[in-house]
Amino acid sequence: MSQYPPPGQYPPPPPGQYPPPPSGGQYWQESPKGKGMAVTALVLGILAVLGLLVVVGGFLFGIFAVIFGIIALVKVRRGTGGGTGMAVTGLILGVLALIAATVISIVGWSIFVDSGGKDFFDCINKAGNDQAKLDECERQWNQKLEDKFSITLTPRPTP
Image 1 (cartoon, rainbow, N blue to C red):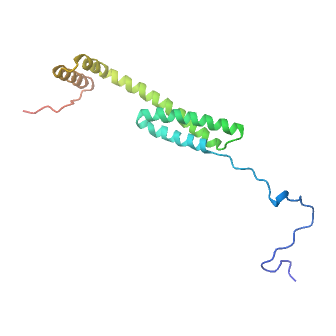
Image 2 (spheres, one colour):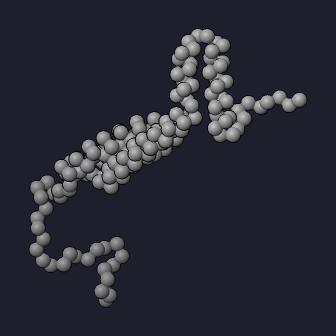
Image 3 (spheres, rainbow, N blue to C red):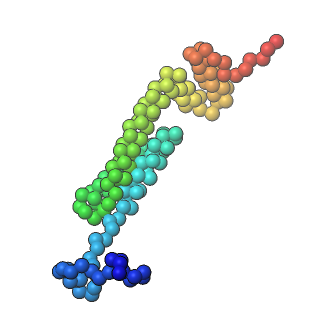
């Protein structure tokens, strides 16, 4: 006779004391913790980084990623939520997007002012609805850009 049971049958359990099953015959299992806030923070963090292409998206999604990341981490700390890694990643991406959007805005504004953009808008505001003055503002700004960057904005006719 072999030491293995016949096919389709299981061997009897080893002898010993096993704890009795809880009432109703079901075992207790911890319910899974919701990760919705953490997932939201992560998605918003990714969108914030992608939103840097249009600086406003970096600010908008970045702020919401930070808010949802903090809420998710508070829930994890209380034991009512899960997804610590996603929450932290979303929070970090949100903060990085906010910093990058701020730097891009400052550099962009500096380039705009250096290229005469502020003067151009001041000229347009003073010109009002006078088309001749508006054309003169545009001509002056184009000339300033051409002089500063050594480029020609409009092709000149050749003789």
